[in-house]
Length: 278
Image (cartoon, rainbow, N blue to C red; front, side, top):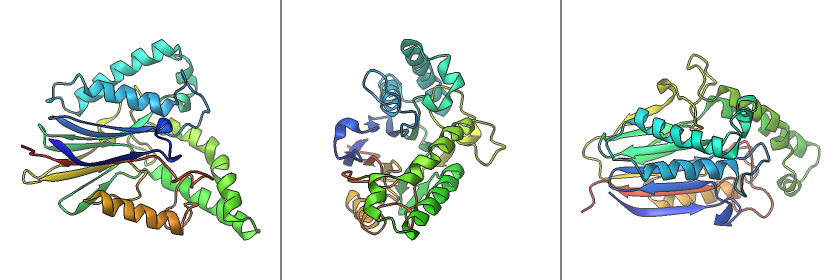
């Protein structure tokens, strides 16, 4: 396999602060999206999302290529446990799940001809978009939208809310509680899969079988509202939404908007992979 198009960018415009990353070799194509920091904690100068993304990426460097999703998660979790031990937070992450370095991840396995989606991520192939949207996010996005629209209703300017996103600040404690649903029983509609070093119920992992005649597949993080078969089209749609809905409360509802001096509402990554490259 080979990457024919790629792009990664931080929401701040400074790649140093990006919590996304990607990986591609002859066996796997992967996009990893480190979770937004809601604990205000850093470890050795890195956010929990950055630690999660780097831990996962390093794991793929040592995989053979035939591993299924259970074996992949097991290898990642083993590295996570070493990370937690090194940071000396093994007890703290039990009491405060929201400080765990967490990430969403999408994997294409050439050997299995399959995509696995853990958390918010998306893929596009054969003119079809596949997403994995969390129900709990939809709930909080709507709550934030109501809060922000209420502020506009009483005279706040969009520019003021880009400086002080009161909607995000008010739902932040709720997002911290959301972590109780990470990798929880699939019986709850609010449960969702995330890569954080703990067991993931297989029922929470979305699996897509890729047709054998597929030539290209695109993978992306949720920093793009939608991805397409080309980077140009994907970026064009993002630009349109940033112009008409920078607060992310209308067509592109989100748990956060574009902060002042930032270039987008979230970090974003896009890779397009040629599956049978010569």
